[in-house]
Structure formats: C-alpha cells, structure tokens
Amino acid sequence: MRLLVIRHGQTAYNLEQRYLGALDPPLNATGIRQAEALRDSLPGDIDILISSPLLRARQSARILAQGRPVEIEEAFRERHVGVFEGLTSAEAQARFPEAWQRNITRQWQAAPEGGETIAAVFERVGQGLERLLRRDPQATVALVAHGFVAKVIRAIALGDRRDLFDWQLDNAQYCELQPSLPLARFDTTLNDASTESI
Image 1 (cartoon, rainbow, N blue to C red):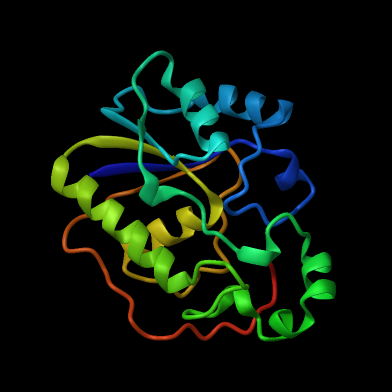
Image 2: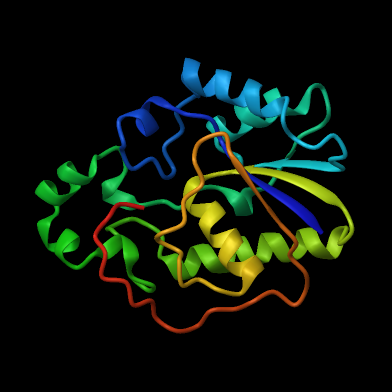
C-alpha cells in the first residue's frame, strides 16, 4: 500500500502549544490555508481518503477531498491525554507535578489520569491499519490524522519505534509509507527519559 499519512492543519491549541488529544476545536484561519496549500501538492492518484473523526482532521480532509468522499475511521483519532488536555507543558507540570516527574505521557503502560496509554494507542491504530491493508493492499490511501497517531503509524509501518518521540510531522504535512502485512507489534516497555511534550 502507498500510504500518505497527513497531519491536520493548525488549530488555536496547536498555535499555543497545548495538549490537544480528544478535544475537538476547529482549524484556525492558518490551518485552513495550510490544508488548501497541501491540497495542491498531494499526488493526484489517491484511491481512498480517510479521516480521523475529530473535527480538525475532518475539516482538513474535506479541503483535500475536492468533492471526493471522505471515510471516517475511529481507529485514527488522536491519543487522549486525560487531565493534561488543554494545558501547556508548563501548566501540566505545575498542576500535576508528580505525574510530570514520572514523565507520564511517555510511559508505555501509563498515562495522565483519564488518558490513554501508548500501548493502547499502538493497539488501536494497528488494528485500524490492518483493516485498511486487508481491504485494499494495493491502494494509494491518504489518511488525515494527528501528530501522535502519525508517529504510531510510522513506527508500525517501519517496524521501529526508536525515534517515536524525536520524529514529528508538522501541521498540514505528510509522510509517505508502504506498510504491508504482517504489521510490526511492540510488546516491551519504552525507555525514553525525555520530558518534552508529545
């Protein structure tokens, strides 16, 4: 499969560098312009256009679609980061110092209170990717999703998560991957001491 993993355009939360997760704000004016610019640079042979169910992804996908149908896939929604959502890194550190000290957003089997673990995101996204590959393994697919989900898709497709926290897809940018079955599975704990927000 030729898979174009696209991150949605900018939102006000992205601009303010806040944890966004399951929150559902729209694109801002910059994000709309970014999606319009990306539309003109995407390959023209896309067979399937898929979007996360969150508004910022759906808005971006509609701009990119140019009238083509957009399929919504729940598996590719952004990671929920619980009590950190809506906060900047500084605010999260001040309000939840113990969780911050534990580097909670980067633990494989732990998450901020009310949030989703990295292991759960890998499982969910991996299942969605597997369904997609079984459906049409030769298709060219544009998938509009989110920053952390893009990291996970790339790690699964490459079979390597060592740069999970270093690699970043910017708003309204895409990376091209060629995933195939069987997909990589990751069962061991992450060892990353960085405290930079994801």
